Length: 380
Image 1: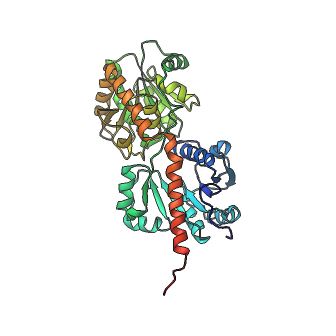
Image 2: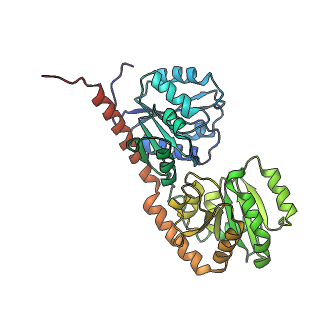
Image 3: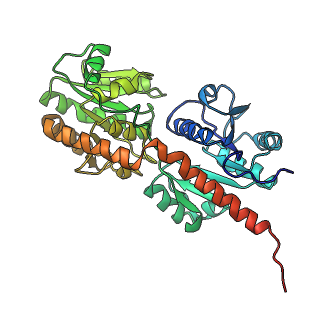
């Protein structure tokens, strides 16, 4: 590497994102790239071939074969790509082997590297001390992830909390959204609508919600539940919906690009996840002025303020989830009050305008500390 450090304007950052779909983590990388590019940062995205992020990212793209933790040829591919890019700093955004191999490639080339940890998953201290050692800084999305990193042996001075953010101009309250929602799914005008916006995977807790619905439907016959998202459990969830006699009340709505226009029309968002780093769907619902009923897992409590912007229940507790949903579905004034408070909370704490400045501050700190270490001391 022969170039000198480029601070702020002209700073070159290599971003490694191994996810193929434009889900929560990749969506945040897109927000970050937008903000950094607007501030004059030269961004280069390293991602898998066929990545949805690559099609929309405001960055130069290096698409590589990436097939997870067992892809032992990924490190030399990353080394070759990083040599060509010659970045000032490498930012690893995901797992799937990227958190191990990205750090190894950057370290081999003598490049500073930072990691964003998004997952809510404790790790043993012996693994954490080894895994996170190469990183100059580890970004935690929530208090829960920060606590897990500390428990895994990561020094507090290397942990920086930067939460996910939401575009509050795009996700905003809209009185016309209810009409769009009812029309899109041919719902009756008196429908009480509960949404779920999550991948159809086990940890998102759809089964917990389905277990709560038969009794809730008996109490509220106009209830309609719209499950937005796709994933491997679609077939199993369809079978369970049929077995519980819920076909007329639950819709597997799939992935909707018009979700920002539909979301404000919901009465409540349900999020029964068993693990969650922070929860982009929660931020989007809050920004749209929709109250949330969620399980108190991971970083969810950073977004959902119990009794103020929504309600939290114990993880896996279908009865408590049913009771909390029943409360909000009956109490329309409380829904409105929670929704307004949720919108204010999103604007105050999670607006997308906060994302790029927070990362720029971290990048500049890491590069300045590295430059200081590189300057030889003069002894007298």
